[in-house]
Length: 218
Image: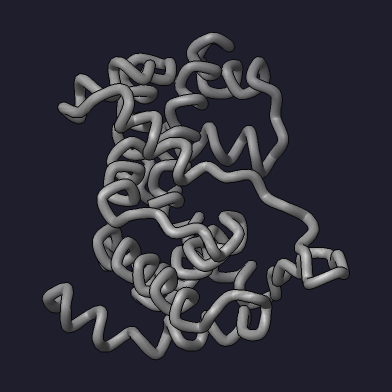
């Protein structure tokens, strides 16, 4: 793979293309572009070319996800770079911890793992988990917040990204996902087909979903 800076430079047009979908929605274009670039970097850092997809196909839903997060955060909220970076570390650490211990970590455990204080953990969580407002004040009028809708292209790219993540699973895990979410089998039915117990399927399914959520959110 080319070096990171070159890949970012070569794919800035993709960021601009994604940003066009959100123009004139109440957030400055520069802010849209900055969020899109963050998504592009995440996609580049986590892209694996061995699974038969182009970088652009994988990157689009990640870029769009970052831009949508800007809308969810109200657009005007400014979070320091250090808090953003800590929030990203918290997200990854939480997912890894859940996969290993089958439960979410406490604030104290996160602080210990990341070698910081509980106060910093809480500050990062509060700064990046803001509620979505369905209305926005425009002088004396109150208007509905116009969040852009997914179109067919975006839905396709998200499906392709999901396909890439599934391709990283081992044979048994792929079969569990196929039976549970594509053939709509119950955990008991899935267990019988795979010669497992229902409890084994349940535990393994949780770990699979955590892994997939981690891969799709980065």
